[in-house]
Image 1 (cartoon, protein in one colour):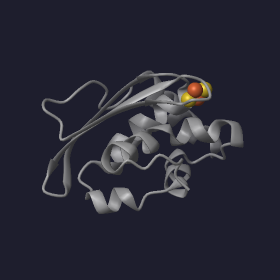
Image 2 (cartoon, rainbow, N blue to C red):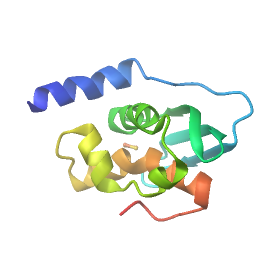
Image 3 (cartoon, rainbow, N blue to C red):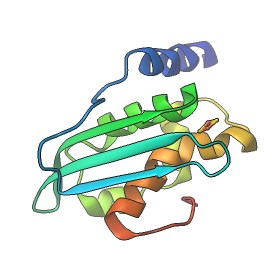
Image 4 (cartoon, helix red, strand yellow):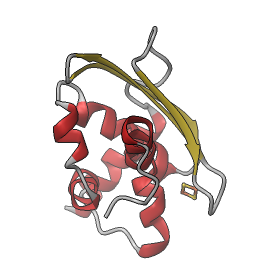
Length: 126
Ligand code: FES
């Protein structure tokens, strides 16, 4: 079963979804993983509280980039309240395979950038 999830991660890394930029995003935030320098930019377009468009850009390891790609699909159509409630467990569920402590920050980078852009939350998601 793990193989399926691994293949899905590799697929998102090789063919990222929603990669690029959107016009006049309501939220735009860029940050780096301080441990390795890998980068993610997240952009959101909102209609009221609901996400109606999302894009990411970045460069880095397979887990960080695949996780960002998956996150864009995950949050499309969600409300910002729903996004605010997302945490480490949601990302782990999304990836579907156990992630060791070293790669955890890779996996959480895009959610961290998203939350920092929306609410200025600087801590890594719990
Ligand atoms: Fe940099 Fe994964 S090694 S985010």
